Length: 172
Image 1 (cartoon, rainbow, N blue to C red):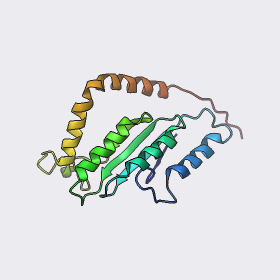
Image 2: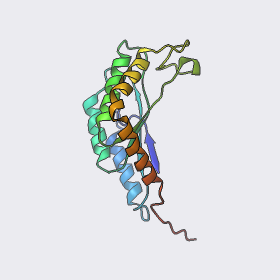
Image 3: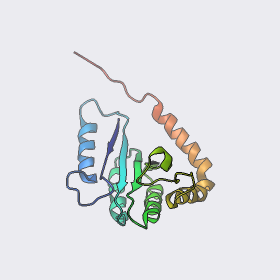
Image 4: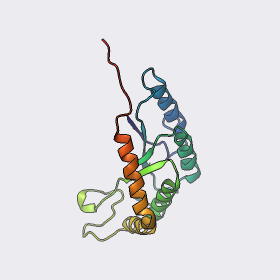
């Protein structure tokens, strides 16, 4: 099961959707009779507004959810347009996520402007890098030194998670 939620790492003032409520729901699901061996992944959408990201809050949310021991994936990561610091904030968010031991993957909700990505395109209509695209290229180059090892570890983890881990008995 992959539980994917919004606003969990972005906004510390959302009383409905936050890491604490996410952890309560996750605990309810995994403690339900018969779910003890359930394969679980934590998904956290990352639609950040144009203001400076609250990295201490993001880190504490990742710490709380990481305490479950399940792999965390950030999904749909982007930063609203409207800030001249969009690329800077995007870099801060990516670095924070990449450095957290519970985060096993990051999916950016970005791409070329020609494909309809209007909030945070990585390239313009002529496929020239935007500032956010430069951030992605820079971080990939920076992190590449450990990329082969990382890819091997991720592949092994993926293969491990694809193995059949649980049996279910269905009764009527």
